[in-house]
Length: 272
Image 1 (cartoon, rainbow, N blue to C red):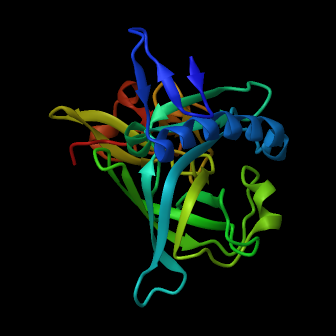
Image 2: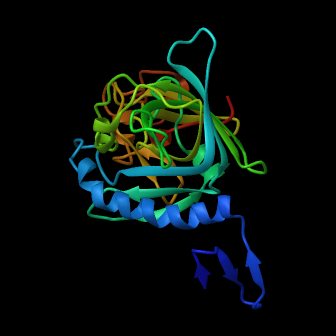
């Protein structure tokens, strides 16, 4: 049984455990509030994004405090630090699926694509703002560094000039130009996986598949796969584009890719 007002929890053994108000109470209150909030506004990002679309997600991280530290010589770029960050990253899906769950923050950071070529967008929202002119800022996030033991998470953040997506659409009207250098009670809403290329691999060299090129000629929609805990092409298998006429595995490219049966779609390879 949980008593929110005092944040005392009675365990199975009947022993009363008093938890840290700043950390545990914040998370007990914020988790359901964040889920309800996104179920209410999910229609803002329920529009179709094309043939590659399927279930899309917003990812929510919360922290007791944080800071923005300007990077010297880089206008609009900051080191964004979250302190006493939540152990789990909450994910909420677009309707009609209404999938709500959580993944360990460390696991999420390993599976999500924070590449500098096409970084994800995020809304940084202060839940205890000093003023309405400094409570929401839209940024791009790269280079996450997570210290699970210290409960500290840092990103490299760049101010976002114009947002054209759907997932963070509800924050545009509240967008500010800056946030206080130091702040408390912060929530970070991260947009779904950025678009990326489909990479084709065929044959083997030792224990690794050989990279044969891109299979679609351009970037395609990537979506969060909540069973594999990572960003993968929304449409799934693009093998036909890898092996089709003009594709990187159509027997006209490197000899390692000559066997159509060995060509497949994967998003990364670890041994080169």
